Length: 180
Image 1 (cartoon, rainbow, N blue to C red):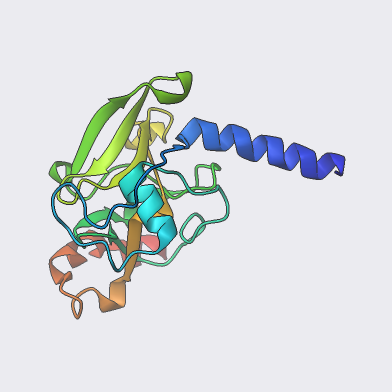
Image 2 (image 1 turned 45 degrees about the vertical axis):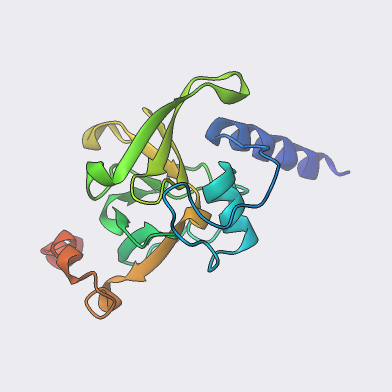
């Protein structure tokens, strides 16, 4: 093994531990505890959302995604996060400063892996999303929602109305002028 490869693997292992890899094993679930069907999910999505798993850093769909839109629960379709609150945390997972609506997120104490953290789950489908840390941007409140891409589905801004998410277009009002 090359030194660089070994170092990269070691760094990835540390980052995975920081966001919380679950080694949950057992039977494969076909529905959430709330009864939501999960037959449309990939095996990776089922592992993350139903078995409290974590996907690899820097090797997931949305870690470096920059398009405007919203991120919805991969199971229930509830709107959870907006691209307007997404930032590059350098961890390799999508990171957000806040959810769209706090009532759509449930937080639980997680003392697994020898550390104390706050687990984040979707309220509607009870899907594991990731973890909440207090090392986010200070100017936006200091929170970092470290979220697995596998727990999300992205809805581009230009498709939100057609896909039933038009009520969230207010999140982008005035953003075009601010970016210029």
